[in-house]
Every structure is written in C-alpha cells, then in structure tokens.
Length: 521
Image (tube, rainbow, N blue to C red):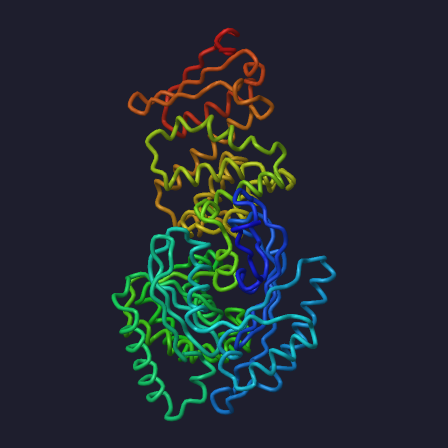
C-alpha cells in the first residue's frame, strides 16, 4: 500500500463513497439524494442506465425553510418542522427499499440562516442524515453539471433559481466555467420594501453585478429550478403547446415577455386551473417572473431552453469518470430499455447494421436517432397489438430521455409508430405534434419506420445470416441480397414490407438470392 492515496468520505462530497468504481459501468444501482432547498425538500432515487438514470422515486414537500429569512435571519419555524418530518419519512423509505445511505445537500437557506448549523445538527441527531451544506458557487457548479448530464454538448449560460438565491454558470466543451451567485430568490424579493418599482431596480442592479462578474455572455440560456419550470409550464399553457415535456422546451424572448405579462395580468386561481401548477409554487411565480423579465432586459439571451436536470443530477455527474460522461445519454437510455424490455435483447444493433446502408449520406445528428430507434423498436411489444404504434409514439415523446430536442422526440416517436403501423389517420391525436415537424422529417421518419418494420421480419436470424441491403440513391434502386437461411423468412408479409419500404423511398427493388457458399463466406 506504499504510495497509495487513501480516499476519505470528504473526497466523494455528499455521497461519502464512490458511485462509479468501475469506469466501464453501465448500470447504476439505486442511489437516493435528498435536496434541502429554501422552498422544497425533495427525495430522488436514481436507478438504471448510469449515463441516463431513471427516476425510480421522486417526492417533494414544499417546506418553505427560507420564508421570512430576509427579515429574521433565521429559518422558518414551521418549515423546520415540515422539513424534519419529510427527512424522517425519506429515511424510513430508504430503509424499506434497502438503499445505501441517503446523501443530502442543503443550499441557500441553510447556509445563510444564523440557526442553519443548529438545524443541521438537529436533523442529524433526529434522523441520522448528515446535510452537506454548499455555498453559492458550488451550487452553481453542480446545477451546471446537471445540465451537462442532459446536454453533453451544452454551450451557454445556466441560470438556476431557488427560493433564496439565483446562480449563474458558463458551460462549454463539457466543462463548467465562470460562476456567480446572488440573492435574487423569490423569498428574498417578497419582503423587499418600496413596491414593484423598487424591486425592478434592485433586480436590475443585481443582474448588472452578475453580468460584470461573468464577463462575455453567450446567447443561449438554460433555465434550472422549480419556479422557472412553472413559468415554462404557463408558457406552454398560453401557447397551447402540444408536447407537455419541460426538458429541452425552448422559448423565444419575445414569446416569453408576452407570457410574463400574461402571468402578471391573470388571476392566480385561473392560472392554477389552466396549468396545474400548485398554489404554493404559484405564490412565488410573480417574483420569479420579475427576475426572469430582468434577465431578458439585462443579460439579453437570444435562445432560452428549460432543463429538468439540475443540482441533484449534477451530483451524479460529479462522480462519473470521463469515459462515462462521454457517452451519449440517449443511446445509453435506449440500450438499457432494450436490455430490460425487448423480446430479443441485442437485436437492435443487428437491425441498425442491416438498415444502415440506406443512410450512407446521413449526418451523425440523425444517425444517433436512427440507432436509438433500432434499439427501442421492440420495447413496447407487450402492449395490445391494436395500440402498439400509439404506445410507441407516447413512449418516445414522453420518456425521460436526455440529449433529445422536442422535434427529435417527435421524429423518434413517429418512426417507432411506423415500425408497427404502415399508415396513420390524419385525424389522429398525434397530428398536432407531427405538424411541428418539417415535412421532409415526417417523410424520413416514415421511411425509418418501414425499414425497421421490414428488418424485424428477420429477428430470428443472426447478423451474419440476415443478408444485406444496398441503396443506390442516384438510380433510386434498393437491392436486397439474401442467403438461403434468411430466404425462408422472406415470405409474403416480408415481401410486402420490403415493397412498402421501397415505395417510401421512391425506389425500384431487386432481390439477389445468394448461394450457400457465399452466405457462409
């Protein structure tokens, strides 16, 4: 052991232990994280593919620990009671699920309150949970790493709002750059004297300070935090946006300004009824809306996207070895789903190789969607046959996937639908979503679906025996070379599906029957 470095619990942050001992790890055993924020206390249990973990359990209690902190300097007494009860419940759940010890991180309210250390000790004494209290720059860094977990190639400015603070961080080239923190949380603004005019002046002054600290600002803004997500949900409601997935939801500054004014002018009860945002969260939204309006005025982003991933996901990303960070979260999630749910795990890779010649001129950004579709092509097989295509569409457009924009979700969903359905009704419930796509992308999704539908006819064959496709785009000719073992599977249904694929490509077909010797070479 001479010369060895001994790791201490502090080396692993709030986890106190390494999560990824093997750099080649693919699956993540269940890991529970408690986030003690100024407004809410949340338990998240992650499970599944390590690069794209699933949310096995997710519970939030709105405790309001930071409410009144700016006036008293102390944590909200009622919030402390609720937070302690919530943590006690979370500990009991973890024990019942045989989890490794929960890891807990606390943010602005706990670090700012004069009785924060006292409450931290009380939590540990009463529940056994040790809270890892982080400062503002560290909160900014972890939130930005959460964005990188969902967007591996993210470049822009991460803006994370909590109940008592707001943090900024640059992200580019897979790393976190400059960071800054401020007191621009709704709880701090709620008790600010001087009315709305004074609040706006204070917000602008704080944002000017942040802008100076951060230096040159990128055009793209990533929004992290419950209040931002509530505003995004309200923006969806106002716009009647058909895809109700907050992650990677994009807003233009002009549209967002309209929404912020609409929020100000609309009764809170009506907003709650229309959007489903909780009353507790809505009570903070007007203050968060003022901050976001200031962000648009002072920081002037040109693109705005919502991230469902933040501090909690950043804690996982913190411990990932680089080899794991470099993996594509969409492909990792699709591989995990195939291994867990498909009839023939591993065939997705074979299917991708089979149809790959059709896409010889396709850019990598589209090839990753094609690969994901092949991996996912059979994960919904247990659904009723009459609804399997619809279930596939819903699966892709609503699943917890990172690294997938809304148009890409719809492309993936449409291709998987056509894996099981050759046609769809123009009056179907999906058409509002399909209308968001470019017509050429709709066509390409249908082609991909038909290609998978045909290739799936050879599921029983090994890759070496499936035969090959050749696509000659200039001559519009699709050639199937098939050996004797696969020829037995090329029956009437398979022939019809091959013809349907060729029709979608606008191609003539040719079938080449290989001799056994050629098939064995």
